[in-house]
Length: 578
Image (cartoon, rainbow, N blue to C red):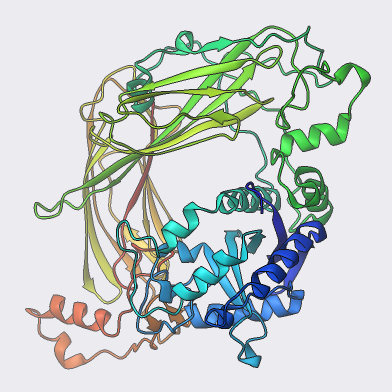
């Protein structure tokens, strides 16, 4: 099989584990069956037990296999690591967290066959839907994964060839299948608007991007035009954005639960015969609405990429917007260091005539402790060098995400402080916040808003008592929200201290079954609401008593919500400094 990405089939299941949409690609499936026939004919007697399953399952068979896997693995995502409940042949037996996103299903499990593994299946959860994409891989990789699922040891040794990581590195179709799954998820959720690109005359105000580009700004981005014929006017009218406006062309799909017509149109246009070409919904929508005219045809000597179906003609400009997020887990304990990282993306809009190549230089990659970089498919990234590299890209139409990055953060977070919650009784807790905002940050950096949320998803909030030093407080059924800085009243050029002592009262703790019958580490027991009254009279040991009671048979954190425990919760802060 040649390189690249081809998709064998796509399934979408709802929250009831029923297949509500499916699409198979016969052209790709013929290639798979031919490869399977060749692989099985050449298989030795020793490897005969790893003969591959060559047929696609029916929708009902896949749904049954998906339910069986959820029961075996504990959830739709699964454990991701080998635990006591893991069985030989399961995904968690491989002992790699990536198996929560790249899964395998055993079809017709009641037949107890060993050759019916369907893999690799890309699992993407969006809203109430499970999106499963099956890319085309060579049968030998399926055999290799089957062996991994049955070996006695676990985990991936560094540098080992026989590991899931080394296996996936040889499969570029996995990356393409993830892109397909996310594109379909955006259509299902109607989240198909183009990335935000803000037109603003204000200068750059710092951040990781400036350190990577040397604060070059737009003037440092160079474009080298290709020798092409005169550009053809686009049949799509371009939006004229004023200062502070957002340039976006793609309309949103309606908010219907599942628009099958939109899915069929997108799939048939973006991946004809199962081969993804252009997964941009805005391009697909524009072509569907406007089509092509004779004036839209490019010159015969011009190789036009799929992501730019129309050529632009008009005033040339390039716009960049950086969305950068600081993630910080602050423990307020000397023995546990705070964990601070930064992630972001660079959105771009290039209104350039013809098909120019644009050079985007990056420097100081090692100094900035960059841990991960990913680029738009239109970008050509050279081999990573010591501390700098130049990214060359041919920009598509409209807004797009040019680059995403992750790095450790050398600067302190814009919000520092601590949060304490102490249960003074089974249904009442005392809390204290003490925060410092914008400490060490100077103008022109501005904090546009800051909200602190105390979620209690397993307890119902009845009331709270407390007055913060600044801001307003509101409650929902399962949370207390403290708005310190509201939109329109930004904080710039100074730091402030905000405190909030108070108490929160919950509805009485009742005997209940948690929503999920299984946690990441086994069956969850029923909660007992009976209180041992003789212990309650002991004032000295009340705190110890409450901790023992609420920790009794307390399940570990759910893998989907790692900070949220049954009795003790956490606080999260959302803010926008800049």
